[in-house]
Length: 170
Length: 170
Image: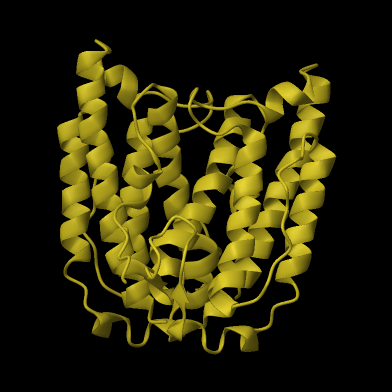
């Protein structure tokens, strides 16, 4: 399988799903008369990231995954979002970035050595290991944790909202 | 990338991580004097699966993913676990099944049409779409939700427990 097919379209799809959950969260806050800030600052454990940060990190993971595997620069996002609209803007910005990629961008990805900020100088993960053991599980970690926080606060979401539509053929 | 490399080793690794969280959960229940059943039946929303079920489904997703993509039979697991030891046995059983796979089992996987129980007769997902859009996100969904439930109940876990060790090279 090609790295593009494993990443870009599914990252875009999942970020679009995440965006739709935020719309749902806004409507829920309004109907349940809960301040949106309470929802955005919710977390499942005292030492866990709050919802805003889960979404920021999910966005970063998607951006870094494609950018690092293709060796392409990305825009920095300063983590200043405090509203649903701002978070939706961040998601839209990352989707826009992902849409600039084509399969050709990943032609030499399998040879890349991926260095992460926390690694010792000279250390790296081979691209395949980075993708399978770090980037994909980490992306889903923050997406699913955002979903879990929203569910725990009463926002009505189900598995279809998580997976999105599937290209079932007959 | 080969489908084997995208699935089997990472599924085994993640199930081993999940197994270690259960050991941690048992120790937490003992030290916090919380009945283990309370932990195993915990959920984040009233209409969400409880922890036991999240683990059963994560195990099934791993089993089905490899089995369906390789066209290989699997053992049925009747979802009767009620203790940590039984859940660990289920995880061990699925790891044992996954360990029977070799890369050769997936040589014609890309041509497979994957039919899921809920589909209309004759409907299917092409193997690649099944893997990227359904099987991987679904597996991580239940693993991360299990993690989220444990974290929400005070079990001390961190990102390293989720990702496991990484093959960092220098």
